[in-house]
Image 1 (cartoon, one colour):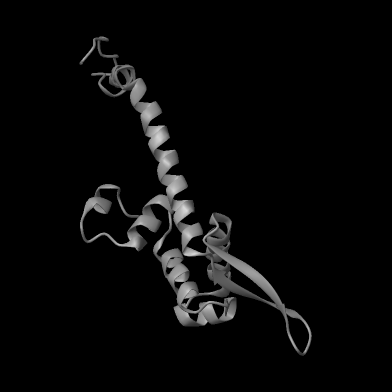
Image 2 (cartoon, helix red, strand yellow; image 1 turned 180 degrees about the horizontal axis):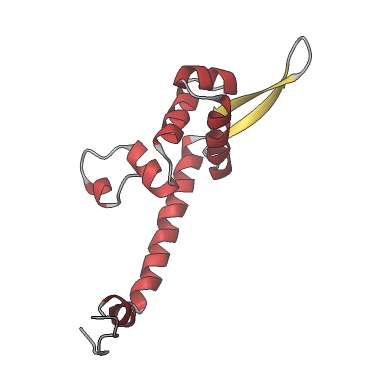
Length: 141
């Protein structure tokens, strides 16, 4: 997982942003970019190209689908049956998903900071105790 501080580097990549804000692991990032490069790829083709078990690839694809950055479409085969193919969502939609995550994080952090002093003082009681006795409560700010 990529840290927030690493995203401020000038060398940060979109993969870093996706990893950080969508909580994607390395395999999920590789799957995402493979689906972009080979739009309409099947589960078997993905598993073969990445050298991973089908069930592992399927689980990771499900996460990407649930996030809304790729989608699955079913096609009928000439000889009967159906096959799933995976496609990337529009880049503008992927950007919207990431922007929503960034905005939600900002709102969450703003709410957290509203009572930051009280939180620090309460946590000092927990983490700052010596010898099993709570430390005296006093404001540090």
